[in-house]
Structure formats: structure tokens, C-alpha cells
View 1 (cartoon, rainbow, N blue to C red):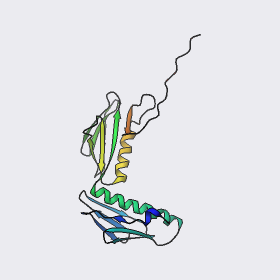
View 2: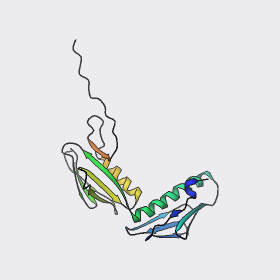
View 3: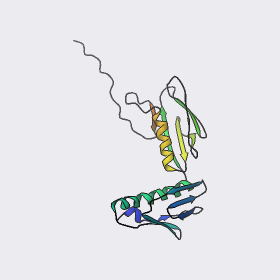
View 4: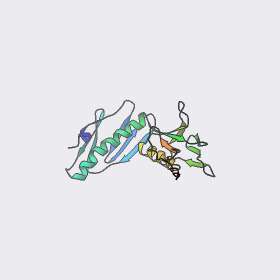
Length: 183
């Protein structure tokens, strides 16, 4: 029995959820998301909630039950509030210049890196914190993928801690070379 899968998903005001067999479409103030789900699950809109039920008790179906519920909940959250990931850039001379769906990164290489995000993703700088890039969008999966891709351009290194990391991420630091002892 899936505890998460059995919970109904509340539909917030101003959000429309349409179910056509296995295709779920969610429309909200920020945009529209569509996703295809398994045929082993029944998805219904009952009053102001989305209810997911299993057609059989196979182990794979049970695993999909909770996942499907959370994916639909994330779709509803995405079209109402949106998702964002914050990336902190640490290093002397390391900079980022966001411009809507494009970002120019100066990360100590001989050339600047220009990254164009997929549709629906926007880059901006955090107004309160210095050198923090905000990756925002309505699809949680795409926001996470884009943030991981930007982070991969210069992962945080363990000796000086320079690089791009998620805001609040802890990087374990290593000691440098020990000086040779004099005899």
C-alpha cells in the first residue's frame, strides 16, 4: 500500500487539470504542462482533487503509484508557483551574466562559456546575494537538469573550494601538500 500514492492531490484555485486516458494536462497562471503516465494507473479528477488508483498489485505498479502522485503534484505546483534552483559562483574573476534564457559564464577558462537554456527556463541574478544565479521555470525536472548542466561547467574543487555549487551545498575541503620536514 502506497501511503503517498493514496493521498489525493489538491488542485489550487486558478489551475485546470484535464485527464484524457493516460495524458494529464495542467494549466495555470505560469503556463501549461503535459505528461503521459502508465496505463496501469487510473487518474481521475474528483471535485477539486486528483485521485490516482492502481489497476493491479504488481510491484512495478506499486512503485509507479507514489511517483505518479508526486509528479502530478509537482506539475500543479509548477504552473502556480514555479520552481527555482540557486547556484553560487565562487572564485576570483568568476562571473555570470544572465539574459533571460541565455547565460554567459566567465570561469577561468581561456574563453567565456555561453549556455542557452531550453524553452521555459529563465536565468537571473539573486538580488540579495552576490554571485548567485537563479535558474527558474515551471517544470521541476528541466530546472534541475539545467542547474546540473551549468554546475558541470566548473564543479567545486576540494582544495580551494572554487567553482559553481548549489546554494547551501557543503564541499568537503582537503588539505594541500604538506611541507617537507627538515632533517
